[in-house]
Structure formats: C-alpha cells, structure tokens
Length: 77
Image (tube, rainbow, N blue to C red; front, top):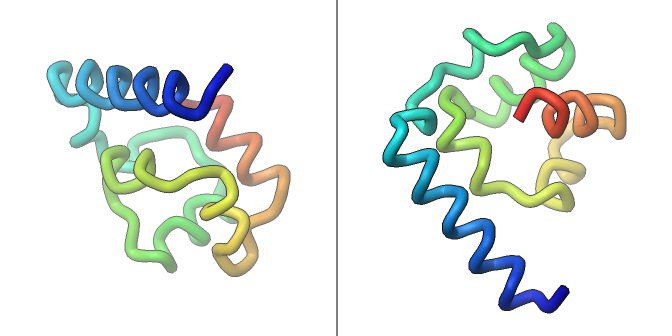
C-alpha cells in the first residue's frame, strides 16, 4: 500500500469516528492499564480524539511508553 492510500484510509476513519462522536470518549473510560493511562495522562491526553492523531512512532517517543503499552492501545482502539 502506498502512503497516500493509507493517509486516505486514516482520514476516512477519523471522519467516521468524528461523526459518531467517538473522538470525545474520555480515555479514563477505556480499559487501559494504570501504566498506559499514566503515560497518556503525563502527555496531557484526555480524549480519544487527542490520542488518535499520534502515530505509533510518536507514541514510542513518550516517556515510559513501551511496546506492551502501544500494543494495548492498538488492541483497545
């Protein structure tokens, strides 16, 4: 797949989530582990909409955000 195709798919997914109001879901209402939730909170993230703008590479740059936490985020999303 090309990057352009992937960007279109991601953009379409975000539009659908926005229409459904899912981007306003509070992260604390999701079943993240304490460690993952602390990492996200320390970055000032509170809603799903704030989280989904970050790529996996961006998430890896967060302090104390490991592979397990990223996998957990991907599974819950």
